[in-house]
Image (tube, rainbow over all chains, first blue to last red; front, top):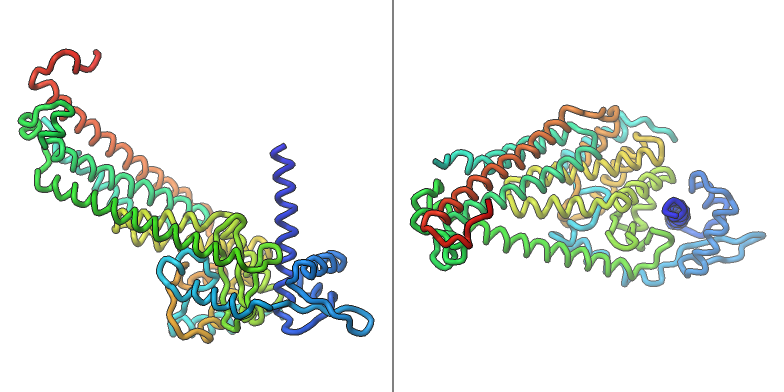
Length: 129
Length: 312
């Protein structure tokens, strides 16, 4: 019983994570793109899975679909952009406890840090593109 | 009859733990280090507070209304008490200040956590990810049921596809391993005992490194995570002018650590933690025992009726 729940939970999580990745790819694209383009930038996802997720995101109202040529193109929706961006700025700008409870990806850099990172990024880091 | 030195031993041991723990913790693998440092912080803060309370009680117990509750003899207690009365009074003051500031800090952090969760609950999310249209590159994870990863469109556009996966894996690691609780506990222990502030910083850094290493496993490429961090930090630094309260650790250190080979298991450091945590417990037990004997002596001295004698 607990094992089955564990597996179910893992499956649900994996599905949620893939949904997040598809949404991130759409936003990164910067304009309407086809499902094939989305699939290219979501490592390890099958085409049909990407299509299913895109449909679900459309149903949720997070993504719009438009007919173009023989297929569809998809674009992210930012209808509440003003409200949301304002909310996020207030989250971050309050500083102190408010900023401390957010697990931020990167913290601020000093000038010295910036130079060091530029070096690391363009020098020692193996570039794979 | 009562040796003063053991009375102060827990303060000394918890001070040693406060100094050694950040040093030893930084040398461990991030996950083990985060656990060890958080446990050490709880034990050190607990020992420090309990010891202060014990010392304070040797003075508080001499107040007539308190002594009447025992009942014990104020005269005997005053004569036998190895702790300086003024010092014990200071301890009582410190205990009060610590309790008040810990309550305030918990309230503020709790309110901030709930507030952040409320604000993020309103965001439309695909799976566990909410994207907000904002050119400034930011990304963070918010604790909740379920937790949420919030990323700005600006951040998604500066990273390539694989770097995006690394970013999401890092933030999901924070949520999966309940890293918010580690940093919350570390913060509160440092409020209780300000000597633990270096440990709070070292612990928060270990938590950040833990998420980095976890992301490295998920995308099976540690240098990729390093590159994602470096690119994200540079981009958000360029876009931002206001200074923010920074959590986590210095970014270049994280990048360097990911480019270096993984830290091997350090049994020595783990043993040092275990020994110091045990020493805290033992020294506290000795003090508690000594104090109990002190009060027992004060109880039996005035020949209180048999009803109050402990059953032997």
